[in-house]
Image 1: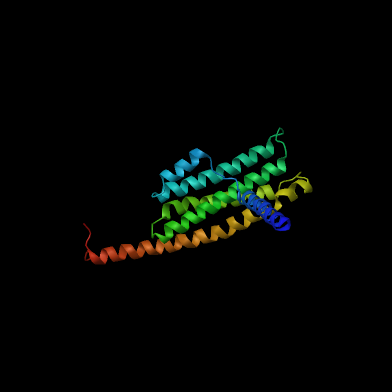
Image 2 (image 1 turned 45 degrees about the vertical axis):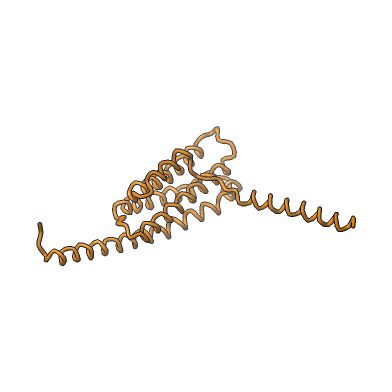
Length: 189
């Protein structure tokens, strides 16, 4: 009887520990501030504005990263670099998820795609500058090397995807225009 009670108690305590560990593991810093979340929510049906916000926020994260790296007062520069890169990557992934959503909805996103393609080039340059920065101790660079590598790979592959999507969007716009002209009998009003 006592053994059975002890086993039940032990199982319950173990279950509580496992659940706590899972909850801690699932916690991930949200890269967005409350005002940024409000701005994103307010533009959900406006691709040009919403995608522009994601570009703006990603750019801001790289700027804060660069400022922190050049500030002699920054404590634990490697951790700050890691965290800002992680924030950038999370925001950039959200940008790509939103692009996919607008494409699935058959929205014309050529205008914001032009901004995104320009930003891709800027982001690549800034990330490469960080990777190639002189005077960084190897121990420091090792602490953020993985997330920097992930950011570079993601931006590189996404830049190609964005250019391909732009070509597809341009082609679709030509077809829409041709179909519109055909329906109106080829007449201009």
